[in-house]
Length: 257
Ligand code: PEP
Image (cartoon, helix red, strand yellow):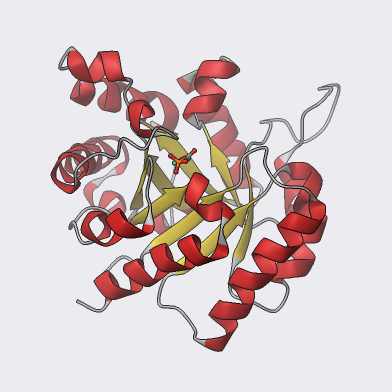
C-alpha cells in the first residue's frame, strides 16, 4: 500500500513573511490532527531558511524546486544537492515542465540531477508529462515512455519511497484544465508500466506517482481515488493554507478506503 504524498510547489511566489505565514498555518493545522498523507512544501531556494523554521517540529517535509548535478564548483547561480540538504531539505522536485520548457532541461539533465540528488541522500520528485500538441497527436504514451527511460533509466533504486514521479500534463499546469480522473489514471497506468520496464516491477509498484495540473479542493478527491494516483503535486492551490489542507484531507479520505 503506497502512502499518499501531497507536495506544494510554491514556484517563484510569496515573500518571506508570506512564506512563514502559509507554512506555519499548514504545519499548525497538521500538528493538531496528524495526517495519514505525506506532505511537503517546496519554496524558492532563497526562502528555505524561513520555511525550515516554520515547519520545525511538524511532519511537513521541506523540499527544493531544482538542484545541480555537481556537488560543488564553478557553476554560477546553481545550488548543489548537498547544499540543499544542509539547508534542511529532504527532497527535490526535478524536471518540472517549466524547467524543461523555459530553461531547456533535457531528459539527460534530469537523469544526472536525479542521480545526484539520490546519492546526496535526498528524495526526488521527477516530473514528466506531455504537451497539448503531443496529446492531440496521440503521442502521450510514447512521450511518457521516452521521458521515463531518459530521466530515470538505469537508476539503482533500493527504496522506491525515495523516488516519486509526478505526472504533470503540460496543458493542465496553471491553466485550470485538469485531466479527468480517467485520463489521469490511464496515464499513470502507462507510467507504472514504463517504470516496471525501466526499474523492475517490484520497484514500480512501490513508487508513488503524483498527479499535477490544476489540482484544487473540488477535484482532488476524484483524482486521488484512482488506483494508480498516489498523491498530488500542487502549484496554485498550495499558496492558500485552506485549499492545500483541503487537498491533503482529500488524500486522507482516499487512504482510508
Ligand atoms: C505545478 O506547477 O507543478 C502545478 C501542478 O501547478 P498548478 O497546480 O498551478 O497547475
